[in-house]
Every structure is written in structure tokens, then in C-alpha cells.
Image 1 (cartoon, rainbow, N blue to C red):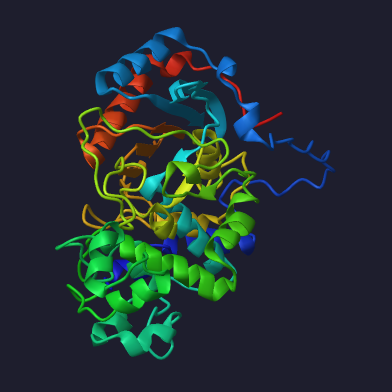
Image 2: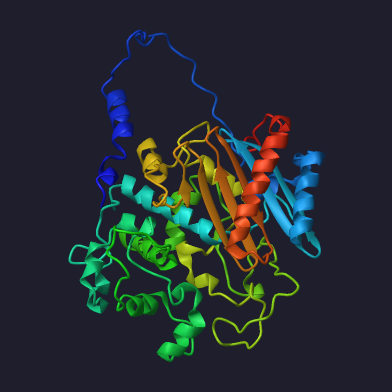
Length: 428
């Protein structure tokens, strides 16, 4: 672990300690002894997905740009949420959630790898409770998941820390195929008639040697975030989804997040339908049950992704959650400033944030996610603005399409930022 990983939280810690010991800057006045009136409690909208509708946001010129973007990329539906300094200014659905239902700001969509940000928040919540730490070992005699030690053949596994999992620095590789998206091949290799349980998958994968020594390099790993989900289960004593609901989403007043399903029949209440491009060829299902399925319904083992990519949620609730982990107000934060700093500090261009895909030195944070039938982007800017754009349709660009949505948000900001209404849709 580089020395900078030891000191990156030093400045916020000094600030916090200074505040705790009552240090004052030169010229700062003594606190007044005058009795202040207690603040009026803020009443937050509880059911964001139902309360925030399309008719609350209308900026025709901007909406026309979004419509043109969707037509260009053949998107069936999309949802946009714009937040500034924790205030939700604009939220609108475009196109269709399914052929008979318009998209709304509260329509739930698969979040793909945006799920990793949610999982990282869960880990940070547990760290603040003193139940796990970023430098906690994952395997080995004192490891959180040491029940898997008998299946390990490479001693370097004992070097993996929780932080390595969150920063994609644990030593795993997807060269030769990502096991989280190669379920049919895994079943064939192991002679299985059903998709592997998480326990079976982990035991099998831990028998492989690591690609590099943990902490010395990074390679994006969905399997690493599956392990992070299991870390949450082990240290919390709760199923992963139950912990996330109780300790992350409910305190944030986000009640619509769910782990998604694999087939159309598994669609959640209020969830969109997913689409691929007309020329996208059918594939065999991930579980071997069907010879020909749409790639977005049965092509991937969505329910097996857990915290690596399994969450379903709306743009407005995702905005609300970001407001709870950005270190600012007025929305109360779930994490203290030190944790926010740990998640977003920039080291260099080759180091991922914790859950965030990219954190720039000027304070811009990015999280993306995509697979068949969905593309999601969170772009948090240094000036306090956050733009979230989620679609229910694949494009031929695959994961690279999130760069196009990032360009869209940049364009909309430049042209219409001053025209956005000054208000907060989060409040009643």
C-alpha cells in the first residue's frame, strides 16, 4: 500500500479534531450566549418515486435536446435528475418505460455498476460503526471471510484488504472472461445444471492464482465487489440486501431500491422494461434453460451480481442518495466528512475511488454502469451540481455509451444551467 493511502485523510481529521477541541481562528468571535430559536424541522418527501412526476419539470428547449439525443441513439426511454447543493431542481422521464407506459422520474431501472457505489457506502457505514476497516484483511487467519481459506491455493490472498476490493486492487482479472458474466461457461466447466450459488462460485474462484500482488496494481473486478457484498453480510450479521435497505436506503428516505431479477417475469413493481437495438441478435440464456433469449432478459445472471451490479432504482432516489454521501447540506449525510473524503480523494489517474469510478483533483466525481438494456451515469461536479441520466435501452457502443451521456450532461449544463428552477423537490 502506497504511503499516500495512509495520510489521505489527515487534513479532514485535523479539521475535525480542531473543531472538537474548540480551536478558533484569529479574529473569530466567541460564540454568543444568546438563545437561538430552534430550527423548524424540514419535512422531506417520503415517496419520491410517486410524488415527483413529469408535470413538475418542464423546460421545453432542454427537453428537446434530450429528445433529439434519444432519437439519435434509438433509446426507448430515459430519466434525468438534476440536483444542485442537495436541492433537486429538475426531474423528468422521457419516452416510454414500456409500450403503454411513459417514463417518469420515479421509474426504476437497472443501475448496473452504479451498484458498486451503493455497496461502498454500505462498507463505509460499517466502518463508522467500528465493525470493519478499510485495512481489514479479507482472508487469512484474521480475515473477515476466512471460512473460505481452505479453498485458497495462492498465499497472496492473505494480503487482500477491504480497500483493495473497493479500489479494484485485489489481484483479480477478467482476462479470459469475467466470471460474473460467464455463467453458462462456468456451469459447463463444473458440470452444473443450475447456476452456481454464490458460495459455490466463490470457492471455485479462490482456487485460482491472483493475477498480481494485491495493492500493487488495479484491474476492474466485478468479482471483487461480490466479495465486498459478502463482507457486509459477514460483519453485519444480516443478508446483504436487508442490511442495505435498513442501514443505507431507509435512513436516506429512499424506499424503492431492490435487487433486480433476470427475466421479464422477474420485473419489480414500477420497474421499466428493457430493450436492445433492433439488430441485436438473440443469445442462449445464462442458465442454459433457453436456446434463444433477448440479451437483456436472460443473457446475464443479474440476480447473481449482488453489490457488483444487481440494484434497481430510480433517478430521483439515486439523486437523493448522492445528496446523503456528498459531505454537504441541507440533506443530512449518512457518512461523516472523513468517510466522504476517503471515498473521493484523488491520488492519480490510475487509482479508483471507493465505489466512485473516477474522482478528479478539482472535485468532480463520476460513476457509470451499463449492460444489456441499461446505461446509468452519475456526474457530480465541483460546483455542487449533480446530473443523473439512466436509460432502458442498449446501444451498439456498449459501456462506451456512458461517455456520450456525459457529453450530453455537459452540453445541457452549458446551455440551460441558468434556466433551471431554483427550488427543492425533495422537500414537501
